[in-house]
Length: 198
Length: 175
Image (cartoon, each protein chain N blue to C red):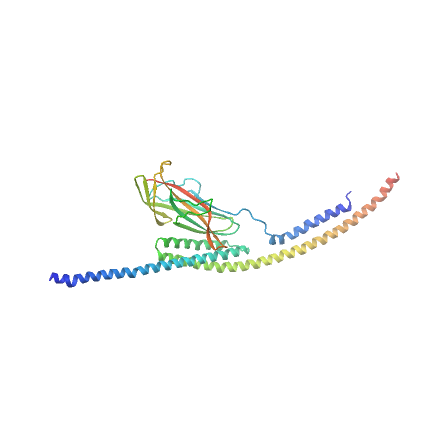
């Protein structure tokens, strides 16, 4: 048979557990538990909303479709801007190590607000115009994105290793920082390699 | 006669035409510049309005409000601002102005809604806090009183049981 002191310990433990249970609704409002890792996602999907059938061999006058998506896991709602940029092989991409964006000017932009744990997706339709080729060089005059035409005037040289005139359509994710009241590059970018054909 | 016509009518007329075309081009230039400026300032205002609206929505969210409906409206305003920026880049200034103004109107509306949502969320949070605190205090107290009552009964029962056990121990000792 247990001693009375042992029963005292059992009763004290039950009392403590009970007090904690009754206090838990109030403690839940007061205490803030540390949240998980905060991050955002940026993706590009093919025309079937899948990671396949991406446009690759492109030519002037043909419409291409991809989907751009953003996922928010920052712990609160976020205000994003997705900048669409276009470059040839010699122009620079964002630097993921330094966390700096590409110095190229943005052509098209999406402004979006996403709640925590939710995602956003929009179609990105594009086509090329004024494309010409001469002496191992290609020239792209116009790029239409979602019905808006931009004069890009880019030229690319023949890539001997990969046999093509390569350009890249890429998207950068920027996020609004409430403290600094400014948009900052969020160090996320995705791109599509495009081989310009005749 | 022809020479006279050329000298006194055609030459001054051509000169006059050149002057008119030149002056028209001069008057059109400031107009284009001012339309561009107006569009740029409308876009700037819309951008600021959208930032303020987002900050207000974020405040409401931190206060515990459900901001899904406001996020939907912000996305609509953001789409208008992006369209205004794209129209501005293409030189469509009047379209840029109208889209930017549409964005500002929506964003300012969102600020008002966010403020009212925030105040109602704060009031609801305060009510919930006091309800929970009351439940915790009274519930905890009632539980402790009940536990002490049970402990007292248990102690008495335990003591009785011990007393009942003593004679048996004594009889065992005699054996």
